[in-house]
Image 1 (cartoon, helix red, strand yellow):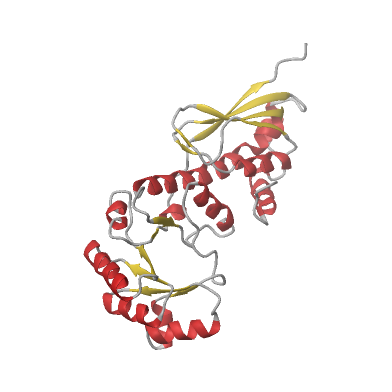
Image 2: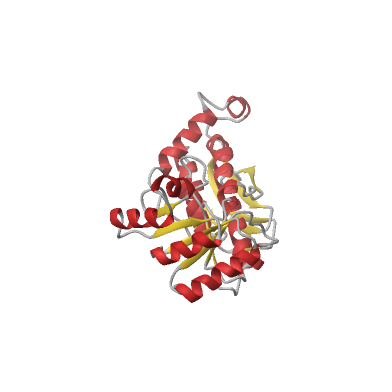
Length: 286
């Protein structure tokens, strides 16, 4: 279970219980108990594989432990179809874990793959790709791991490990400066980021000493002007662009000079990577 975030085993256990229930009626009717088999987990679409530790834990929980990896995680694989894992064990056990394993692996690999596409799109600009908190409940740690394996950078994990002052905080605190100063008093050891919807708020955030400014839904011209404000006022202040990002416009955004681009779609809209499992009866012993 090396590399699995805390709570993953319990998440997998719930997923298996949801899928198997009191028993696999089809496999129990068609496959003799104890019948050995070998399965090939096959990557059918180019992309980045991530989640093999999760797959191994899924199969461990259904009694299948003889698993060999045939690819390296975190690398882009163009040559498909290709084997990802070779799995040996009882056929009923392999089939019991099949769908849950594929659901996890396809989802996490899809996130890693989409992240890698964005990272490649901004290559050479110096801009880094960030994820967000727009994750499936209970899956955040795994999804953020997938982003990092795809070459992205993790934004704050939750509400507790960095300050992000947004429009509602600004409205209730009495303005950008007041919100920043309040957070500086209460959380001096944390990164303090503030959302800015226009250049006036950018200037105010710079003057108030924000560590990072989130440039919310600004067009290319406004982003360039925000970068100019930063360069003339506080070159050390980080700038993060967010809102409306896609693979067609992300490079133009990066070329404005922002430090980060945050993309919710990495985790909430990444398509599953196409992976399947093919099972063959094991050869009889010699």
